[in-house]
Figure 1 (tube, rainbow, N blue to C red):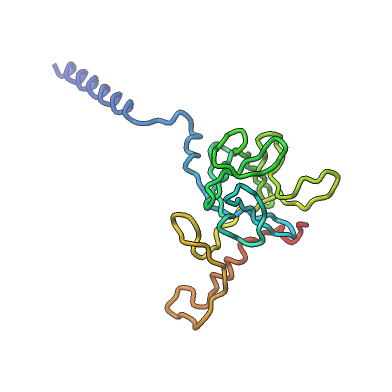
Figure 2 (figure 1 turned 45 degrees about the vertical axis):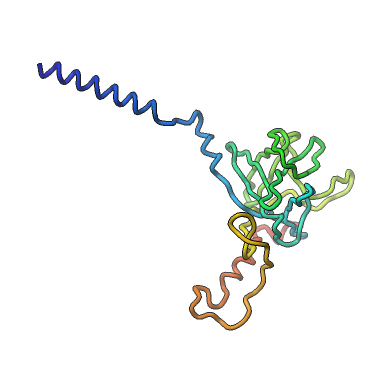
Amino acid sequence: MFLCESWRCALLLSSLLLHTSLSLYIPESPLMYFNDQVRERHLYTGNILGLFLEIAPDGSVTGSPTQTANSLLELRSVKAGETVIRGVMSSLYLCVDQEGHLRGQRLYREKDCTFRELLLPDGYTLFLSPHQGLPVSLAPKSPGQDSPRLFQFLPVKNALISGVGPEGGSEEALAPPQGATDLDSQDPFGMELGSRLDMVHSPGFLHRK
C-alpha cells in the first residue's frame, strides 16, 4: 500500500511540474535578451575635427562640434553585434542607402537601418552598413580626394546638464560652475564637471588626424 501511494505521489508531482514548466515563458533564442540592451550616447568622431553625429528633425545627418539635443542617440542592440540607432529628440532612425548616404527616417527598415557594430582595439567603434559593409562616415563622398577619418566613433555619455527626452528638459549648454562654493555639495569645487569635459578623450585621441 505504501509503494502504491508513493507511486501515485510521484505521478502527481510530475504532473504538477510539467504544468508549471509549460506555463513559464522560455525564449526561443538567447538573442532575444539583446532587445533590452539600450544605451543613450553621443557618437564622437576620433579625429582632429572632433564632431558629434546628429540627426536633425528634417532627416539630415550632420556633425556638430559640441553635444546637442539632436546628437543624443539611442543605441539598441537587436542581435549579437547588430545595432539600431535612433535620435532621442527627432525620433528618427539612422539609415543608409546602397550608395552610402546617411539619412534619418521615421519608418524603420531592417535592411537600411540595422548596423553591424565592430569594437576596435583602441576603444573606438565602427558601424558597418548593411548594404556594402562599409563604415558609417560623416565625411562627404568625394571620389579621388582624401577625406578626414569621420567613421571611427567613440560612444560618449550624455554631458548635457538637463538632457532631452522624457527624462529631461530642454537642452542647456555645458558651462563651468559660477558663484560661491557650495560647501554642502558633494562636489563643492566642481571637480566632477572637469571629468565630464574629459569624457570625449581616449588613449588614441591625439594621434588621430
